[in-house]
Image (tube, rainbow, N blue to C red; front, side, top):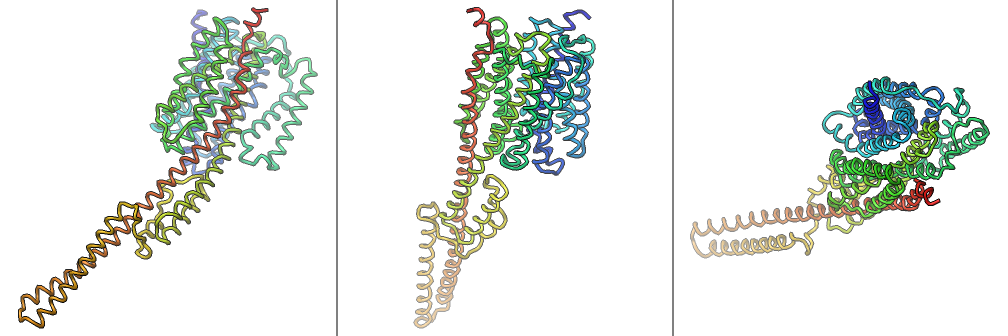
Length: 608
């Protein structure tokens, strides 16, 4: 096999595995409701399907990269692929929720092993100079996978089954396994010994596990709960012990000296924010589309998909510009565009056109794609033998960014929604109270609203229209007259005139009948007068029924209008909750964006 073919196939292998490993961090989020229903469980439990994967990725990346440097990167890559493939197979075959969660953990172990090893393997296959370009292309694949997850998940669930989300990994893993064997040679970090620092790995893993767990589950348990406080204390203690012991070692587990390189430090921070930003689209904005706008999973995925399209377009272009000139400006532009995209999302409305929402996603995709070039810039000045541990640290930073995004944004969103729920409930009850409805209808409507808010964060028309409410609206007692401002008022008033006329007709017919009876001996006239009297009585009764039906119809219109106002209130309040959440992300990104200026030091070096 000639060298060019090896390189092309090696690039294909790295791209494929990076795609499926990254894809699995976001694609399962959109499948959680379906999986929850399938296993007949609750979302709190099924949420661990996503949590355990991100948790293990965050914890094991740095130790895995260090062990690979010592024992051999190719061997560890094959081991990681085996874990990932086996985990994927049994995820798809799982018939119990706990089995699925456990197999997702196995998947996470595989993903944590293979992700940081890709960079040093590329360096060994392509050489230092060309490897930067290759890593950029692989980074584009990773960014694409992160962005395309919700759309791909929606498509698969809509047309096939959630099982396929995991089964598609298996043939890809087998192909990549073979390509790794034939395309790559074994490589190590020759500057370190083969002795594994078990103590350091244990301390680092425990501290990172506690940190990630707190970020992911802090809002679920409560930030002031004894459990979270205990975990935070444990995390701080283990991290301090690790740092103190690690910096004293001749061969530390984490190369803290790497942070002295301004390019590596700033690029790591930017890649951290990229992980944070993807939560805004794949989780928060997707939640808005599905739960506020009531879009289907496929429809929401279609809109978010445009961010993926822009990643595909801009990241190769940005990487080419970065290789030829400087990574600073593409990455800085991307960081600012991410901030601008969140600024645009602070202006969302439930009445926005799809074009506006797609435009937002395009801006976010452009920013995310360019900012993700920080994966390339981070390692471009790092010594070749340190590329493995550097890659592990950078990729771990992105996972921590995602964890922080979930903890901060989702947590704040939940808090904002609780506040919005209280406002919606209060406004809904006020709307019912001031509406022209029968007392029994008001009572049942208020009880229904109370029940719905005890179990959910928002209501819509379907939530309120229950059987009890429909039944009580059919009671005749207490049905109000149509309001004068109502369209039904004139109909009701004219019907009353008809009733009055029929009453007068009945009186006249009765008088005429009495006159005929006492004055003229005419059987035919008496019969006609009696018929007129009887028919006028029937007319009165019928018109009274019509009057009641008009009142019912008017009440139905009032109730429908009340439902509509409640729904508008719900949409307005929930949208405001999302806006506040996006404002938080916007401020954070605008504060961090200037750091992207230091992601490449070539111009600074040239000036000196």
